[in-house]
Length: 155
Length: 155
DNA sequence: CCTGTAAATGAAAATGATTTTCATTACCAA
DNA sequence: TTGGTAATGAAAATCATTTTCATTTACAGG
Image (cartoon, rainbow over all chains, first blue to last red; front, side, top):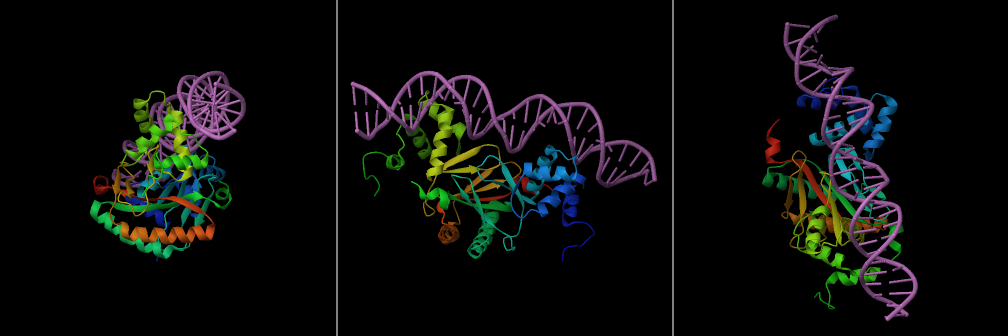
């Protein structure tokens, strides 16, 4: 079904926008594809830099920002001082997941279960919101906050 | 129903935790009560400082951090560089709401509609998650991201 | 295959929200 | 009333992210 043309799927998304395909962007997209879960800009930089030392941190930030605005990547803030990024998956996809965040130790649990109720809610709500507010919705964040097993026991 | 004792409802929450009731904390809680929607630490500081110039920005941050960890306040990050805070309302409450965020102009729309589907989903999911992961859930964030009417029309 | 040009880039500096340090002050239990 | 400890503010430190700016590069058009 994909693989219309010769290159990766995102090439045409870039071209539509008038963006250039550059080595740095190829590497960053590769890293995002090969990362199952959320990853920070700094970590992307480390990996990108290992592949191609010419890639700078600034470019990583700029690329992620572009990708976020296009709805290719979702940016997350878990409250620990640095943002994380993930390729956006459709709500139905196998690896669609959300996050449980411990307010005390900042541990993050990714969960993929219990999606049935959610997918239904998401579809309905996105439709209603986008109709009412004329908003083109490209992504969403659902986080639950609280205290994990370890941090919750005491007081 | 509330008003068990003489003071505001949160006094006993503080005392349970062994925290002191101080002028700064009273003012900050007042401000949060009188703010319908999300507010930044800096804005709280300005208001608090107007009431009592002795209150410093550091204390505002420290108090908000405490309140967040106790599940009294929810912290939000909308991607514009500074966090926002809100008193947590029960999902059923009249002013329970969520956010629609424009990735381009950073405009934030608060919506209170379409909560029926959500409340149902939230209750089920919070229960399931907290059972499975032994997590004491105190709050949640549901954000939708995309392009607003103005920013979405172009390209 | 060249070439011009706007887009993309990296290094370094700037920014700015949040946190830490530390000496001082003030709750509040006894 | 008082001692011990939590709370506080000012100033300094931190550190992720953004901006600046001079240079390089992708790629449309010839």
